[in-house]
Amino acid sequence: MAGLSTHTVTNQPPPLIGYDVFTADRALVAAVERHTGPDVLDEVRAELSALGRAAGSAQVQEWGTQANEHPPRLRTHDRYGHRVDEVDFHPAWHRLLGKGVSAGLTGAWIRPSGHVRRAAGFLVWTQAEAGNCCPLSMTHAAVPALRTDPALAAVWEPRLTSTVYDRELRPAEQKAGVLFGMGMTEKQGGSDVRANTTGARPLSEAGAYTLTGHKWFCSAPMSDAFLVLAQAPEGLTCFLVPRVLPDGSRNVFLVQRLKDKLGNRSNASAEVEFAGTWARRVGDEGRGVRTIIEMVAATRLDCALGSAGLMRQAVAQAIHHCTHRQAFGGRLLDKPLMRNVLADLALESEAATTLALRLAAAYDDGGEQERAFLRLAVPAAKYWITKRCAPVAVEAAECLGGNGYVEESGLPRLVRESPLNSVWEGAGNVQALDVLRALQREPGALDACLTEIGRAHGADHRLDRAVKDLFTELADLSDIEGRARRLVERLALALQGSLLVRFAPPEVADAFCASRLGGDHGASFGTLPTSLDLETVVERARPIS
Image (tube, rainbow, N blue to C red; front, side):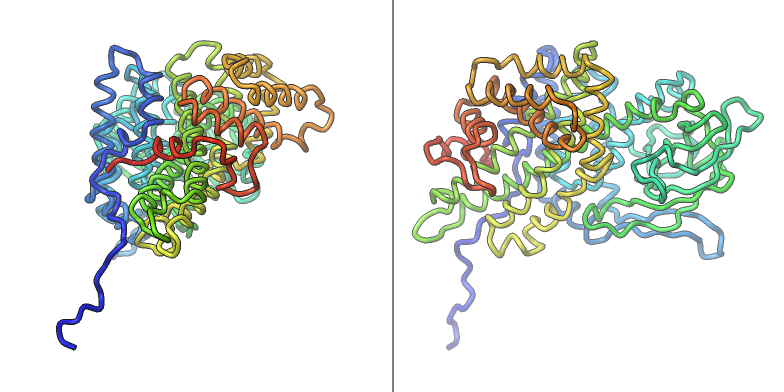
C-alpha cells in the first residue's frame, strides 16, 4: 500500500489572483475612457491600473480575508476604568483603508475628471474588500455638506480630500488627513429623520451647541468627526461632531455597542449616545435635511457603485471558475446552459457599471442639466442596481456548485455583503418615494432623464417600446405611490438600455434589450433566448488573469 496516492488534486481552478482588476473589466475601462477628459486619460488609466493590480494581488486579497475574520471590537474603558470609547481593528483593516485613502478615493472634488476616476477606483477597491469602502464613502460625501459653511470647509476639506491616512485621534488641526462618519437615524424614526429626538442647545459661542440624545446607526464610529442631525430651537439641523476637541480633550461620544451585522463584518457600525456633546452647526437652523442632502446623494451613488463592484467580482469569479472547471466531457464555460447563466449575469454587471459611471460623469460636468439628471437618476439607480446585487451574488455562487458555498471561495462573503447597499442610505421604498418627490417638485429632473434616454431613440425597437410604456406609467398619477417601485424599475432599465444601445458592443445591447426590455426572459438567470450571441457576451466579461 505504501506509495499509493489517495489525494491527487485535479480539475480545480486556480485562484483568481495576480491580475489587474481594472484592465480586466472591459465595461469599466470603456466607461472610464468615454467619460474622462483626454488631457488626463493616460494619467487616470495608469492610476486605476495600479489600484487594480493591488486589488487583484494575493496580499490585498489576504488582507480582505483577515479583516473579515477578525472584525472590530469595542473597547469602552481602559484598564483603569476611564471611558475611552474606541474601536480596535485588525492591522489588515488599516492597511486596506490606508491604501484606499492614498489612492484618492476621498478626493473626487479637487481633481480633473475626479468623480469618474474616483468612481472607477471605488468600484475596483470594493472588489478587494467592501467594508473599508464605508468610511471612504462617508468621507468623500461630507465635502458638499461642509461647503455650505465656507469657514468649516476651509478647515476640514483639505484633510477630507487628503491622500494621507492618519488613524490617531488628535485635533484636526494636527492631522494631514481625516475620516468622517455620519449619524442620522434613531430608534423611533429610522429613515423618518424628522422624528429624531436628539436635542441641540445653543452655547454662547457662535455656531456652537451641545447635543443630548442617541443615534441608532452611526457609520464608521472610529472617524475623526461626524455629520449628524439634531433638533435645534428652529428645527432639525445639521451638526459637525468632532471626536477630539481643539484643546486635545475627547468629546463626549459614548459608543454603546457595535452592530452585529449579516455582512460588512470588517467595518464597524455603532449605537452612540450624546450627553452634553460639543457640536458645530453646519448650515442654518431648521434646514438640516437640505444641508445634508448632497451628502446623502453622494453616498447613494456609492451604494450603486459598491453593488456594481460586488456584482462584477461575483461574475468574474463565476466565469473564471467555469473557464477552468471540466464537467461532462468539457469546460463548464462551453456548456450551452452554463453559458446562458454566465451571459445573463454578465449583462446585469455591465448594465450596473455603465449606469453608475454615467452618474459619476454627471457630477464632473456639474451643469444645470446634469444636476437635474442626477436628482432623478441617482435614487432610481440606487434602487435598481442595489436590488440586483443579491440575486447576482447568489447565482454566481451557485455556478461554483458546492465550492461556492464554502467560505474559502470568497463567494459567501460577497453573498453576505450583497443586500447591504439596498438597505444603507435609504431602503427601496425610500428611494422610490424620493423619485416620486423629484417628479412632483422638480419637473426638470424628468426632462433631463428623458433627454438622456432619448439619445438612443430609434436604435432599438424594444427600447423604444419600453420608453412608451414608461410614458404610460407617468401619464396616470392617481395611484402612483402604490406603483412607485414599478415606475422606478422601468426608469432604471430604460436608462441602462439607452446607455448600452449607444455604447456597449451590439451583442451586449441586443441581449439586454431582448431580455430586460423585450420580455424574452424567464424569472431566473440563465433564461436568455438562445438566438443571442451569448459566447461573445461571456467572453467580454471574462477576467484575464
